[in-house]
Image 1: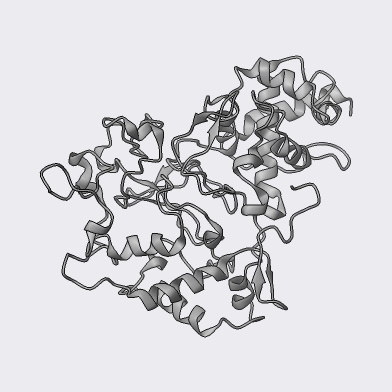
Image 2 (image 1 turned 30 degrees about the horizontal axis):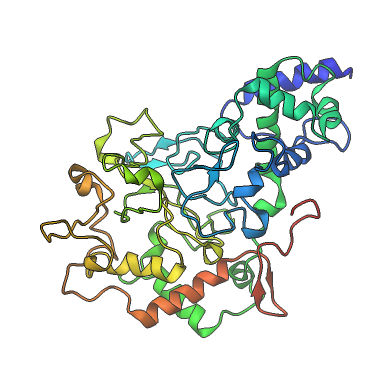
Length: 404
């Protein structure tokens, strides 16, 4: 088939996809959109600084999440413009647009606030956001791609006229990235120790088994309520998230420069980044429930990156309401400012009814220190790249040679 017709056919396919899944194979022969998308993902040249790629913040060696303990990353032409949220992992992404289920529960979507309806849409912002890759427009992106070492492969995949239209180039770049994110084995390996345990190939250690029991116990950790640990009805491995949204009342993090302004609040589903749900005041402060796969490798936790290790994050879950003074500041009047990262009117939105958040000061937390240790041990079994011979896991173990 002539290249120009192949290019037109692909363009129509992209437009027709809308919110649907992106096919990984979109051309003749061995050249695929996913293979090109991997190159684009790893290319720091596609940024104003020339030093920031998608992989800079979503490091393959760190389970496609950040590689440092900064609350937010900095981008821009001089890599000095701070962001607003911690970096989520790109592994085990959902594949559905944001929606409300039959009970009115918000679910799915892309980004921490679900505002992107598809991977095609999600991939747009990082290229042009001032605190990320900071390119001016589609024309600037086109110039970068046309000068890239994979420019000829871009033409081979999308047609000799692939660079004639800047908006079309930007769409094709995002199409390739979406194909990579959906199909790359390293983004969906399901090769953690827990996967081997479910398959009957290994046993969990005693502490790990105790942690699993606490994870599933509705009167103890109750983690299973949002982070399902069982296989799906079709036998699919558990994703450890239901992709719903929750408001946990995480304390304000003053390491985020934007928080120096007292009137600034990141309210998740109802703004400021997302605007279509601004009137849903009941959703203010809710963020998407992340997968717990590879959670033991994370260096920061929650949407604002406040906590720097897993044990401290779990302590917050179980002691937030029994020992709030451990987490929240006091005002000049000496009163505890609980849920201080929310305007007072939205404190009622915080989840304060489900276990383990159903406690009060003076009551015992749902988990004690030893039980927290066991839960941490279990969560370590969710790290990708498990090797039974050494009983160790490394999310970088099975990366393809092209990944850093």
